[in-house]
Image 1 (spheres, helix red, strand yellow):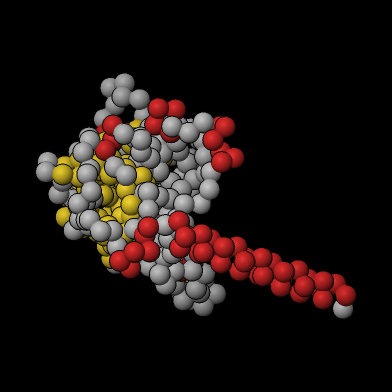
Image 2 (tube, rainbow, N blue to C red):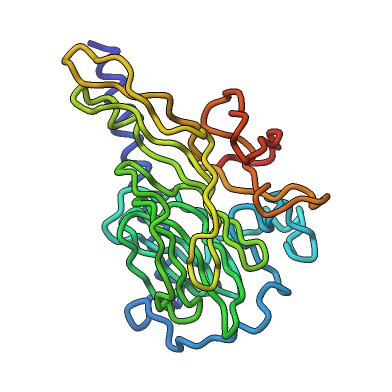
Length: 313
């Protein structure tokens, strides 16, 4: 009884502390953030976006196509001695969401971030006000990549329905949308990588969840990397981690046909480019695959060693 009450009291104290912290952050955001004006909408929707990658930025998951996640001092402009003096400047709430897992991208003085409900936001990095919001079909959890196009800049990202998007980075207008996998459980949770005019997209699934249903004929999904033309969204090529499609196997306890082999998906991983010693765009790889299995001889992908730099996203 005493142990039970102790655990209950601890839970109540934890909830109380979380509530106090949340209220403190909200109050601080209201006091310090200019984003509360005009309903949080920025007064001007056409802030300067000239040569943004030459200025301090964090683009995509790992800053650059090699996915090093290393920020030089020139770009960071933040010394170790500055850390104790950092304070909350503004806070932003995701309407209708219960969690936030997407890594923000900061380019050209703007912050780009996806959300659980499929909304993608472009915020002012200084005030937190909203330049635009875009509604994807499903949730967006990958980091957004900003790239230059012929007449401006584009933001690239994927959703939980395996669709890739390109929207105007300044206005949020959709430029193109491409479905990269028709499997009903396919998702894009890893961040795309832009190299030149080619966009490399990792494709995963949630078939581990659907496979728990005994009436589901599991499992048929194959992980892949897809290459798209960044200007049009046109499919250039698709490389599967398992060369052959799933084949019929045994039946389960309720008589449902099971399939195999499957898997080797690119969960929350991101394509990186190997050093270009005679390499081609097909040699885009990931730092880790979902499961460590021998590479199939006919697969055009080459596994890269685990980098060990930063958490997987």
